[in-house]
Length: 127
Image: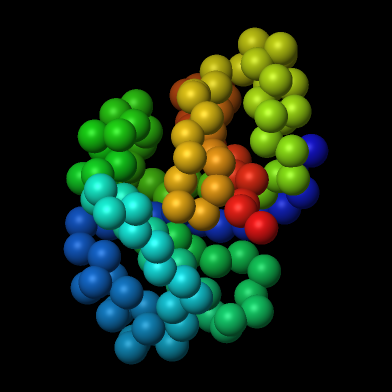
């Protein structure tokens, strides 16, 4: 039901500074930028516009307030799915720790954890 590793989320304190690093020093491009107007800003970067996997730079302070159990010291994997509700129910029925489904600027998302409380996220992207 998960069909690919889509994005790697990196939690940063200064998104603009980190975007500048990746674009000016490493040569990545900004693929998209989204802001929900309430502090949640996603900046998607990748080596090229058609890269299959990209990096999402997220505001560490905002994410810490929104999801305090996440380990913000390491990147998070963001998986893609085409049927979020089915996957959510499947994991829940297998007694996997799952978070609430949340509407984000780019789609619906939820977190789930393995037995060591490593958290991962899954998104069903808006069309």
